[in-house]
Length: 572
Image (cartoon, rainbow, N blue to C red; front, top):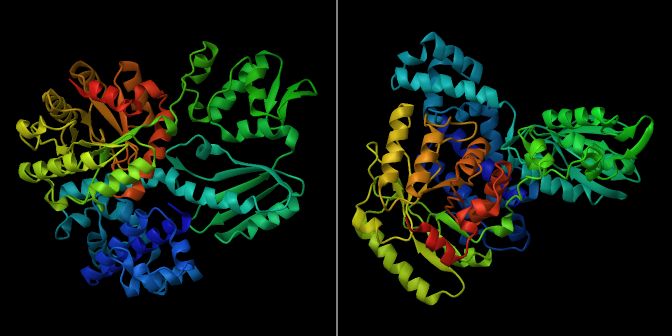
């Protein structure tokens, strides 16, 4: 998604949240949320559409008023209604939306009755018992809120990798326009593809640092210039991301890139190896005594201590150095290895697009197959499919497959795993599908023993194929439900099932630790987007990033297979 699209999505969602906190017309609120979803699912830049004079009212859910707001935002970077609400409502109130158990309506109740405006006040009121006295806030909700405040505090001012990426791409394009830039790279946790990113460290090799740094501080999305120095300049971007731009001499570039990429623990381990060999390794190069013997290329650092290049995603000092010494580094999966997506929602339930549109978009991505996995009947809020509607969808898919060339639509469902471990649809219809994704969407608060038993029983069903978003977490918003991941993986191995790596940037579920555990146990994964629009099929790259952090190789993933190979794997 283009950066300006992302900013507009954030602005419309923020506007909707402020209106809901204020208790405004629910139809207006819904209109802004729908507009945000429409823009998020676009496969092209809104800015380009406005500049080309296209009629924005042709987009789903965009009327004249919203079209005008989009144009205003493209031309000025502002939405007058949003600024008006921001002057009226305390800004920290929106931080409360990151707390599990709180939506805009409950936040309004807390604000109006207890004057709660930020996370600290929320935590204090929950601990004192004041919240529990309010109508609609019982002990369980208060307990959830307390846990949510701790999680929000722990995350601090970190940004999901996908959010940071939007700014990185635009910033790098902007910086490359500066005269004299030779090399430019973002290091740090962003380069290691961590789920969340704090500050951005940008390294630049340039003939004229002064020209580059002058250009840098004029970047249109700079909110505040913190410093402007001879070798380093620091700014804060509009969403609050800090960017440090560092000038690096060409002969030091590789060593600096390794140093600022990290992790700290990985760097210490490499430097310690260097010391044992009589070397000094730092951001300026590799030295024997006072003589620089390497550092222009990043590989110089690893060669100096007798190691092959270690991919940035692996650099956490969690076994990668030992694997490199033993010649056992994984050949990490790449986006180009993926041949299909096994979790997509259509307009039959809560998706935006027709099955035909999804298949056409998937084909344009070079995919060989796409699975339509709409929700099952229990999720009434999404118009979940009962047996009759699922059969109608299966019939449509058969007809579309006769017309399509170069891609196959797989018949599937995201079936709810009920509390007792049974599945939400009968075996007769599940047995007619190509695959079944089973997911938990309710009863998150079960004990670890009960939740684990629930999933294992679901896997006992002979039609169960893939466990969707296996731990249920939402990054920075909801902790994983209590579940014994190792037992689930061992159960999947015994039963011939697979686990999903959900590529939604809010989920990235499984995490890197559990992915390595899956690999060790021998359970293959499916990297899937859980897409609800054709634009979000592009989320696959976030899943591949996460897979690489989990040491996943092409052979560890089922949707890197050709269609005949995949169908063979799907047979239990």
